[in-house]
Image 1 (tube, one colour):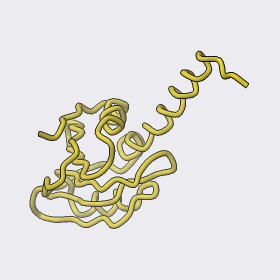
Image 2 (image 1 turned 90 degrees about the vertical axis):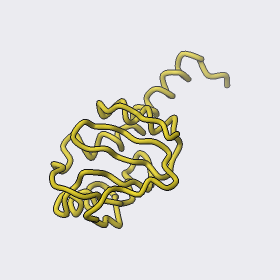
Image 3 (image 1 turned 180 degrees about the vertical axis):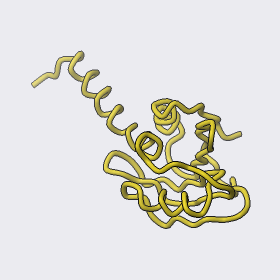
Image 4 (image 1 turned 30 degrees about the horizontal axis):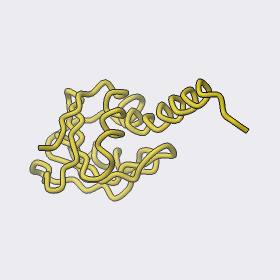
Length: 123
């Protein structure tokens, strides 16, 4: 059976929108990000991930909450800035920056846009 091209495009848009929800989850209805330092964790939910990330600035309490949001795991707070070794790109959310250390840059850029962030490609 041949699939209608319009339905194929619609299905792709719906799937992409669902996958992008992972990026918005930590910021729309997620924990409030406050404090100083950085937080490394594995970002994941039912739509996308896992992605290794380091978010800054993030205080210890906010880091703990990030590690418990969705299926996120392994949250570790540090007093200093994120290590950017292996950086794929950064989603600048204004109040904080999520540095992606794994994942596909193209998909992450789209997800960043869904969160209202500005994507900064790794150099």
